[in-house]
Length: 358
Image 1: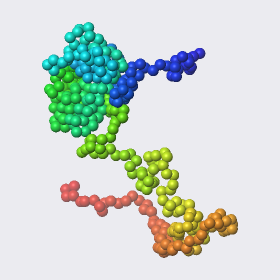
Image 2: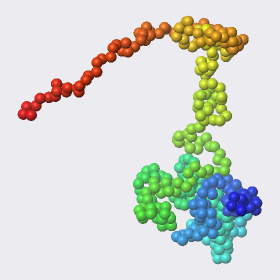
Image 3: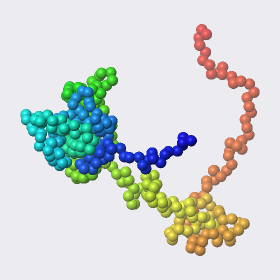
């Protein structure tokens, strides 16, 4: 009896929001990163599973942070996010980050499984990679290129982008052996063939196409110089331009005629060999076939004249040339008597070539 009804307790209005998605949204708001970008990154990295663990590396959590990247982010962003005690416990030696206390180290690494902390760190990492790529490339990176930096680091993503431009057929695994070992599905196809840098670029960028990379992107007039400008969709539909095409691109555009001449051509009725100017005071012209032609009904000329309106005035316009006489005569071919039909088959012997010895 409840096949087509939904209990009130399970309706959309009463269903709780997904806590993982809510955490990602909060992380985007706190760091200024794009929510769509963070959500798609988490979906690709862990399928929105906060405790996901990679089998080929130390990557763990919603955004699959490896240990060194996570320690670096906690060290840099921890004080801003109320994690100063963890940030102070992290030290650097020989270019590597470590925590002397094993218990504190375990707690710091376990924070990767907390969706709220992981989302904030992912948002901060996204902004950091964005700035580094913009400085390296001389333009703002696309969403797919930001994801490359998430997988390969900002320097690795920059190297991949440059390799695509210089040598797109180069095998990517040769330049990124560690990343290829941890991400075989990206650097190798199902048959085990090593992908080129161009193919790897496409695989990494595919899931982040048309994705917002930042919540509020400030427009820098000097950024992205040398790139073709993004065309405004309705650039040609500004006032006074392409007036007749507004209806194709906008539901709130002009509803006026394409031009007044065209409107008058179809709306002004002809009367007595002249055309009445029923719109404003300008003169209107319309071709007619002869001076004696009249379009007004002979049965009721008074009613026809009254329908024009008191504001209309007659316009005496020059007439076009008269119809050529040869076009006015009946068809010559139709006047000629029909030829007699051939009674027998067509004789083709006269057209045949006589061959010797045949």
